[in-house]
Image (cartoon, rainbow, N blue to C red):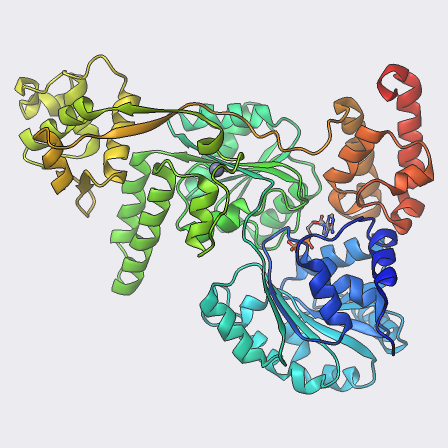
Amino acid sequence: MMTPSDEDVSAVLRKVFGFREFRPNQEQIVRAILEKRDVFAVMPTGGGKSLCYQLPAVLLPGTCMVISPLISLMKDQVDGARVNGIRAAFLNSSLLPDERDRVMQELLSNSLDLIYVAPERFVLDHFRQMLGRVKISMAVIDEAHCISEWGHDFRPDYLSLSDLVTLFPDQPVAAFTATATHHVQQDILDKLALRTPLVVRASFDRPNLFYDVRFKEHADAQLVSLIKKNTGKAGIIYRASRKSVDETAAMLQAKGFRALPYHAGLSDDTRKRHQEAFIRDEVEVIVATIAFGMGIDKSNVRYVIHADLPKSIENYYQETGRAGRDGEAAQCTLLFAQGDISKLRYFIDAMDDETERKRALAALSKVISFASTSVCRRRSLLDYFGEHYPLENCSSCDICLGTREVVDCTRDAQMLLSAIVRTEERFGAMHIVDIVLGSNNRKIRDFGHDRLKTYGVGKGRSKRYWRQLVDELLAQKVIDKSEGLYPTLYLLPKGLQILKHEACVTMVRVVDNVVNNASALPYDQELFELLRILRKQIAQEQGIPPYVVFSDRSLHDMASIFPRSAETMLSVLGVGEAKLARYGRQFLRLIDRYCSDHPERAA
Ligand code: ADP
Ligand code: ZN
């Protein structure tokens, strides 16, 4: 068979997927597969992995078999492919016997471009026998990190995938994952024994995400104000414990927000219901522990808020990564307070396993330094993954966009340091700040700390300022904290120098936080809202998630260029021929009506 030409490839990209251009790495991968070469690709969430195999699946004769670990994701992928006119189906335990028979029939009669199967099925003998009678064009392993015991969600069934290359000696095998350290990558390559594969490691940068770390003061009020700024948009709030998830969800509900909790303490049924409601845009906010997010592909999450510290940078990257999969602007905010560290430390200290405990501590300290330094957030995230970020200013994080000023805070630091020394390094941050502020509480009086020379010397500044300064001194390694349940502050050598006027401290203060404005074209907000309502109606009728009908990006485009004909509709990003045929009329009619009602806007 001849390899499909460049024209064939770009025609499919345009007509089936409705895209004009490839995202980074997609083209290279598609080409390799079409040339029957194996592929191993690490691409971040939202990087567009599906297209890398769905496009060849359309072009190559036969069926592309995708091994995918999560049932909920399979359905989403199949829905998404079908609305683009791709002949797709899945085989997993959620199917009724006759549904399963129908899919088998389709498969055996070569009328599928794509078949998604769970790894549990792939190991079954009778499934393999059946495969022998099907024309398979290529094999794909989604979430390939599951094959590695070094990865974070190892699945024993995935080990059987080592057979793929022997099972398909003449067909390409392509493995994809969004999370793989170099260690995991090598392990996957070894286990799969790919044949001189094209190896792609895409940048982990997510340019459409805005990163923002804020000092956590009144978490509830801060959450409310953040949600209000994103009214009507979908967001996830992560909290550290089930209890705080429930409390926050209840607080938001009481204030009239459509919010639901999600954590491992809820019944399977409730969890499923809440997740569905979120996927279908029926509630705006999901408040969750990290249990949430694994099985969802929702592409239009517009913000992720960490109301508590994440456990590690990997977690933070993965959790924030659930925002903006569609490539549209999305915001990631971390609320950070020194007090949270001791809470986490408390749990870590209680761990029995010495190695686990050390690992957790190291991970936490990376998170703390991410949150408290004044280096570009994007740069420090990428740094963590061993990637160098080339730009001086990313223009999309609080540090790079904030108006910053460098202030000399040596004198204030001396006040704190002196309070620490005068109380013999036996107290924690709160108490030290109370001394400097001149607070009149029981603990201060009991210890006679109101008679210290430093008592009340910092009255002129807010409690918030002093707590920030403590964070800063910890981050700059001027002081450190002891381990244990009640960590106490003590001086490091640099602290002594400062106290003796031999060194200075400066602090970079972000004076003003600027909000993300990375959105593509300016668009008509009112029309966008109407389009969203229509999208939701259609999605409900067809039992698929709204973002499968059209992405937020497609709706933005429509609300910006006001398409009035099928032809212009096709120029909207994400609108291919199948979607045009399926949904074009309804959307065109709505836009038409809107334009007659508002002739001035459509001009
Ligand atoms: P991943 O699986 O890597 O997280 P997806 O395959 O779900 O990413 O793609 C993420 C989003 O990007 C989807 O909404 C998809 O339609 C969109 N997308 C993929 N490729 C392109 C492209 N070339 N141009 C525009 N959008 C794209
Ligand atoms: Zn930056």
